[in-house]
Image (cartoon, rainbow, N blue to C red; front, side):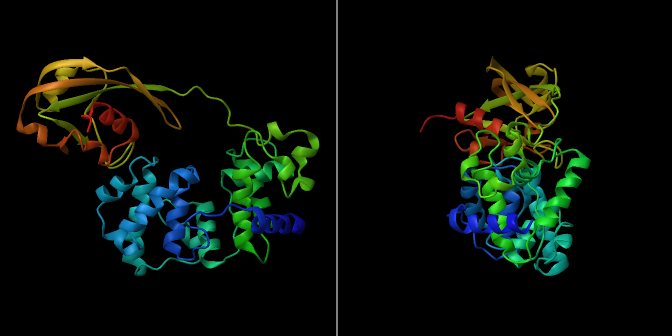
Length: 345
């Protein structure tokens, strides 16, 4: 166990990733922000958002004072929008209950909205130098292969085994380098496909390599057929503007702006429901968007609107200039359609 940790620390200091803007940072706000953004998201996708977020909200107080709309607009395109809503809620909780100061222990950090056990441990390690175990997707893969842990890591028994292993491995010293090293190793060497076993600092410990089970460990998620949901989106256009409505505060794309949606209703009925008299209609090719638990197939209906009633401005709806609407707090499929329809500049 000690040799494993020492090998990780030595490798990280010599060969670990460099140049990420949150590396070496001790400010808990910045560490927290980076760890939330990195949940289920690649480093190259996060970097720009992280820098823009800090420029707009340089500390937890600034984030707490912002509206949820501002936060979602800046987050737009990064996905998993519950993270942004939880980030905002946690900032307000920290300011209201703790004068903006972050708790120092992983246990207390895990009580914040959107901060799970592994994220809390990472914040405690990088911001405060606490000894705590992380277990994100990359680390699960490293440990499952190195120590021969069979089964899908999402299963309760397997996760419990991996957590016990992760906690036993944390060294008494060099915990920051060790934790970063585990993350780096899983991201760059112990990859899901085509791992670079010849460059691995713990290859001598690796059960999967020794037994020829690299491709089998960790076991994949059991395959389940994802249910398909269908919807029609009304893309109402009038005088160079497009109609958007705010999604409910929780659930799919909560708090973001999207096109009015109906399930199985025709465009003209939907138009009347939102206060629009439709002059012409054309269908765009259907598009699909995948989520963790289902697939969404959307039929976009582009409608030129002849006349609008005041109802079109009620119920959380608004008209935006089509040329600028894609810059609003909208989910990725909505942005794709807005950019496709926007006039060329």
